[in-house]
Length: 390
Ligand SMILES: Nc1nc2c(ncn2[C@@H]2O[C@H](COP(=O)(O)OP(=O)(O)OP(=O)(O)O)[C@@H](O)[C@H]2O)c(=O)[nH]1
Ligand SMILES: [Mg+2]
Image (cartoon, rainbow, N blue to C red; front, side):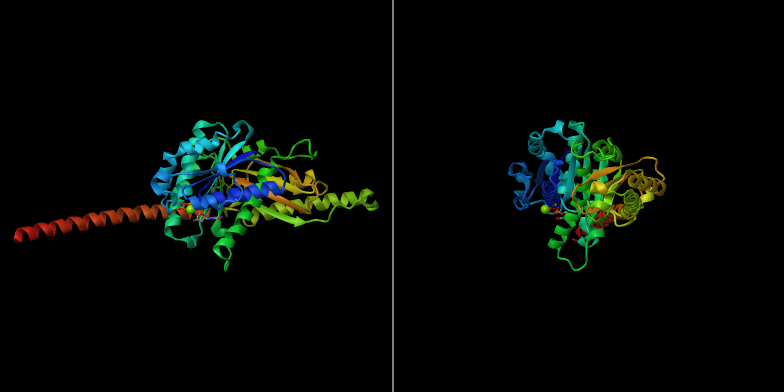
């Protein structure tokens, strides 16, 4: 699946950088174009792979290249003001070559949190290609302002994009890890999952004739095209396999049949593990509206029956009639894996928690404002009494 990636803010830029590294390592090229947008000069300079001309600095007139300091309203304002600068970089993309836009952004800060939804709305207005978001939720230990930004941005972002893919830092942090090395590891986890999914839709059909190769249209149909398709989460599980034995034994029919059964059972169990294990955004799989199962690995270890069984299991698990399945053959690899994309999930504790935070913050703001008005009124009253005395 060919994508134009746009990283918004620091997390967004770093993750797009990581996507580029992954894309060149697997020699697949699902990344058609990569752009980074930020209000902080140093963040843009810190990137390794995004081409210099595709690094767009916004908000210079307001914040002079110093970032917006977690003020996401300011992030949204400078994005609106400088949308032409971003469009200038997008104008260089061969949009007819891409299947979709993907806007990547941390949701807890200011620039990406405020700006990503503004850009999504702009792209939706101009292009017919789907616009997807990849939103990174902050850790719960980052503090109130980050949670509040994420709560507000999430609501707008999910509304503007065709589908919001979500990764929750909170579910993936490990104790005792420094923030920097923690993010490097987490960013690789993010790219391994979402990259594998997007790469899967980009197998040239002439390259390797698999039984049922996943097509980009299957990914798009699972994610949905048109606003309001909700949010998605991804599960992934893999297992090391023996390399292909090309000795005499493999020509015996009994061995072939044994392999078939093993491959089928392995794939069914990997699909279960991927779905019920740690998702990029923890959610109840049963609440998914649509799903996609992708079997990856060396073609001699993939079979149609394995994907079909896995797909059927997911159908039972979700009660959805819209579960798709297919292969992503990777000749020469030593791992067989299953990627499970769950789309339109509604039972997500972390999102309920964010919504609650937003509601409470709104109430607190109103209470504080009301109390301040009361205090001011009584101060003025007292002032009046004092005036009368003298
Ligand atoms: N997974 C991941 N998350 C990150 C990374 N860097 C930051 N974050 C998360 O993203 C959120 C937003 O941080 P930034 O991306 O720095 O924010 P920004 O969009 O640049 O906005 P400002 O710095 O406020 O202008 C943080 O709350 C973190 O949760 C990263 O490298 N990887
Ligand atoms: Mg920043």
